[in-house]
Length: 234
Image 1 (cartoon, rainbow, N blue to C red):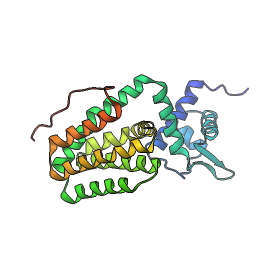
Image 2 (cartoon, rainbow, N blue to C red):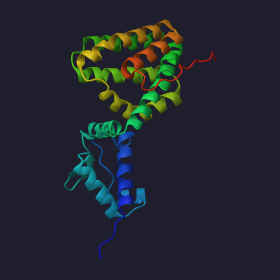
Image 3 (cartoon, rainbow, N blue to C red):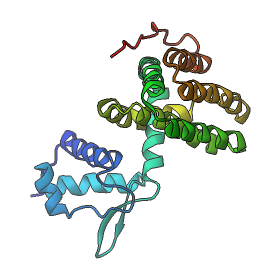
Image 4 (cartoon, helix red, strand yellow):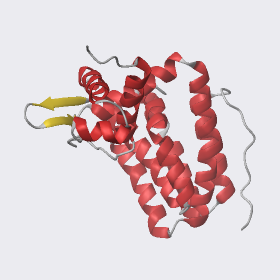
């Protein structure tokens, strides 16, 4: 008799594999462990693992090489981000939650960066803006904008905050991909990034926070109004 595999268990294994890819444990090009090792890792049968791998192959996240095994495809990160974007667009509540996360988190990041960044680090942030000004493609501006916000997280020199932002970055990046529709709208936001970078260079904590809040408001309007936090003097 053929082994019966519970659908929920198969879906759980699929999600666990995707999670390892998204968290960077299995990056692009990685050869996955054998079915036997995966079944031990996830404490499931080999047939359950086989079904999960087949599903991810159909979705283009994994590819099979005869006699070698299953590998993470080059397209996997994009496919996963687009799926996350589809989920966000399909759920107004999820989109609202992500907007609120940015409203609460990113002004704090900008304020801490203004306080903690070295002059050299702040200057490098401004260099990112210079690259934005020279960019003529929407995809390039999305990439540089994401890099700008990730660099803000690093400039806080707060390992917990950096870790939290990196964990949330995949969904936040997916949200940015759908924020604006035209290159012109993205280009209008370059000046806002420049002003934020200058406030950080000047070490002006409150101004950096206010400018970041204004930047997010220009993108999302009143979708998620929250009080502007105040960073206490530590």
